[in-house]
Amino acid sequence: MNKPLPVSLEFFPPKTPDGVAKLAAARQALYVMRPQFCSVTYGAGGSTQDGTLQAVQAILAEGVEAAPHFSCIGASRASVRDKLAAFKAAGIRRVVALRGDLPSGYGDAASSEFRYASDLVAFIRTETGGDFHIEVAAYPETHPQAKSPEADLKAFVAKAQAGASSALTQFFFNPDAYFRFVDEARAHGVELPIVPGIMPITNSSGLLRFADNCGAEIPRWVRLRLQSYGDDSASIKAFGLDVVAALCERLRAGGAPGFHFYTMNQAGATLEIARRLKLMA
Ligand code: FAD
Image (cartoon, rainbow, N blue to C red; front, side, top):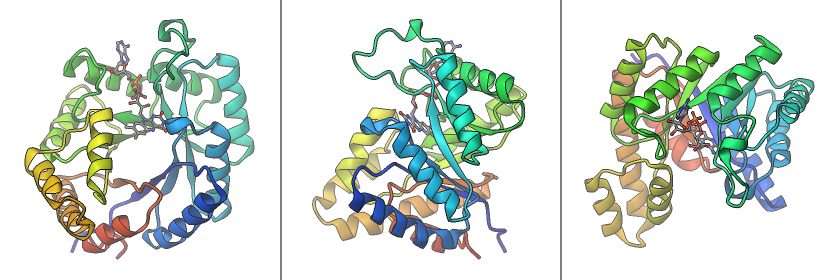
């Protein structure tokens, strides 16, 4: 009998009152999975840190641990210090520490007080000691801007050495890329848990666009199948559940320490994958 693995759930901050209500309903449905924590993204699509903080506070008020994503590119040490103090005052004990992407027209990344996520992790540890559990990003298929897979692995090792507590990966559909990445990180002395990020497949065009943007590979056979379904969303969802549940099974069999679900603020697909894997048993 499989032991239930820890799960975490990722949300993005809704921009409208309707979105806030829908997210609250999705969360209530998903809490049956007893998430170890929920995280809330920052910055993507123009969302603000205020939106992130509001969603995080709503989750904390529901009795669930919540972690804001927190990017440092373009930020000053003083502003990061202020945000860490605000997080602490709000009862936040876990953060997802990222470099983030420089918004267009923002200027030169080299002039930022923080250039890489490892700088942010080191700063948080120096400023706040062990007050925060620090999650960092990992890229089993290599970050799109990395000079090489080796350079990206070194960047990951640097985040671990700077004091990260655990890692959440970019989503992927090739488990071998994850297993190899974990093996290589271990060979470099990185012991922290590397939790695979799982993207449920619920629609075709959004996923293909998203994957292109973040450098995640959709295997050819999956891409072709999705394209062949056209507007048939029932077939896309049924196929997507089979693919992602099978991926999770392989990850679990290979020793993954948990799952981080990119819920896209929807409960249905994540819940169905959890049911198939008996994650809430
Ligand atoms: P880093 O680890 O700093 O890496 C960035 C790049 O710099 C990589 O190519 C790396 O190889 C390179 N690098 C790092 N250190 C060095 C060095 N010393 N020398 C040379 N090169 C180096 N984006 C958002 O905007 N909002 C979010 O909420 C968000 N959440 C995310 C959650 C997860 C789990 C993941 C996996 C990604 C998320 N992202 C988010 C995307 C992320 O911000 C981007 O991928 C960003 O481009 C990199 O952030 P990072 O923290 O991984 O950066």
